[in-house]
Length: 295
Image (cartoon, rainbow, N blue to C red; front, side):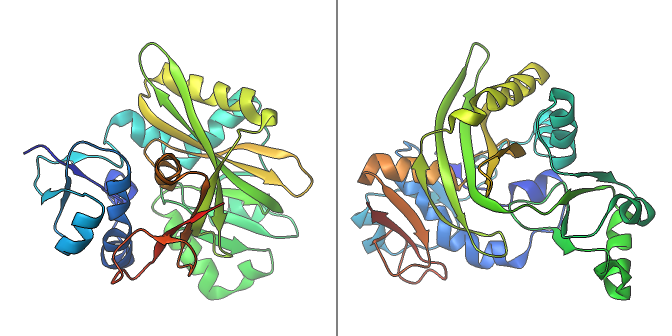
């Protein structure tokens, strides 16, 4: 039987990094069932045991997880290995002359120390998803022996992206579908994040006019390089109402995909994580609660 699997571990497999335990123990069993709300014809391939009552309630179909199951969250290819890399997108931003924060690509601790000035900075792993794999640092913190050694050890594996910290008002994700003949903009969402940068919900919004041209430049550039399929660009609206148009690219589905489909199913509202409000979407036994709160 044909089936789809929600491979949340996509980036880790793509870049051959260890999959964190929380992904298999918490994220996968709590969130993969949002697939059931996406109007997909194929059953969900999973090794998680769902209660019959829950499956009947939402008219969901499951199938055993097999090697032949299609990778629904993200597909592996040489172009996706490039497009999902924060370093490649930093270089593309520079090529397209799009606004980027002060900073750059660093390959050694000496480069890092030389590039930084006073204030707060973020040092980003180019391959990790969401807010993972980031250091919040300052020049004073670099004097800490444990932090310095940790960064030096990580730099032995490859370069990192340094960016000056920003005062962020909104985090926006805009999703496109790229095919051979055209680029279709599907939707934009505002993502709610906690203080650690982790996703805690979101809602559909209109794509800001101020970044439409820049988004098209980025997606066109990746189309010319061979990118196809679902393609999302993260943007920041800053506290001074200016924009960082292309923070990073996710050449895969995102939580915004669930928000879009939930809006089609339930009407306008927000996806909320670990909230007491709204319609609960996943089993009551889930370690992370997902709910839909109608406007």
